[in-house]
Length: 94
Image (tube, rainbow, N blue to C red):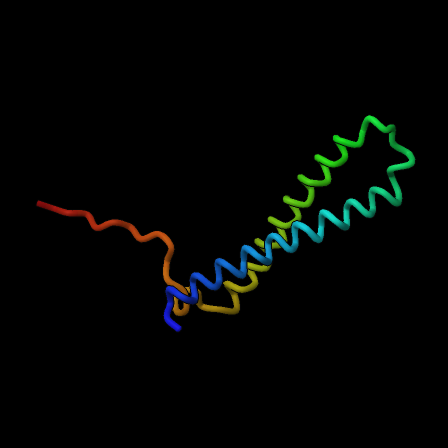
């Protein structure tokens, strides 16, 4: 495999991992809310609770993604195996 294929596979796997962590944290927070807080909260707090659980799941997935990426950067030389996504353009001098 070449660097472009490695980069594409890395982005695909990283996206799947990020979505999986977000779904896992969303389900976990929803279960925790329904077991411990739902009986103590008024019924009108349902939409707000859903929104906060959704935002918390996104934040948690972002933080876990960053931690895993930092760990991978220490273990793997990205420049050796992956192609850069953005390349600076050449400056033309006349």
